[in-house]
Length: 203
Image: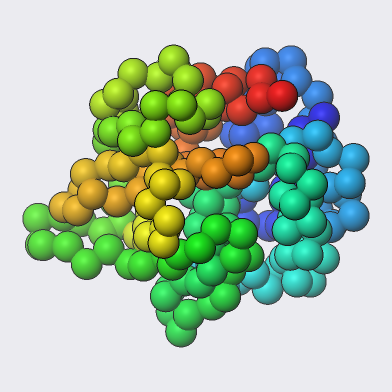
């Protein structure tokens, strides 16, 4: 059973429709205790980092997410959901994250020809050959992005894919049972569907 975390800031509807299309069992988790019955967990997200962390604390999700990850349940963070996995974000006045992956979230600082936020289709350049989330996905495949911030992992070994937008930024991460994508698979047509199918099929 897949838990899709709803903390008031995620693209729950689109993700739910994709999971339904594969015939997979799922439920919407809004409180920390809800996650105990999950086999896999998806954390979508749009919006502000600090606001998300405040909602996590209010709903008992912060400690629950960390505990479920420690139990080795497959976990997928999407967009802001991936950023929240890291130690801290420099968005606004800054905020502490979940800290299950080491690193920070920084704002794009790019030449004038690159608009921020980064919105639209761009390519994935695979860095990790064995990443199960990217199984059967061709290098340089196009996926859909919408973000102003990007993650900088301390451990470069967790980087599964990068994308070029003025700089090479991390667009997918993978470590043990933890996965994250900066792009929106639920909006990335066939490639995005394959990413979510790969996650669903993880043991």
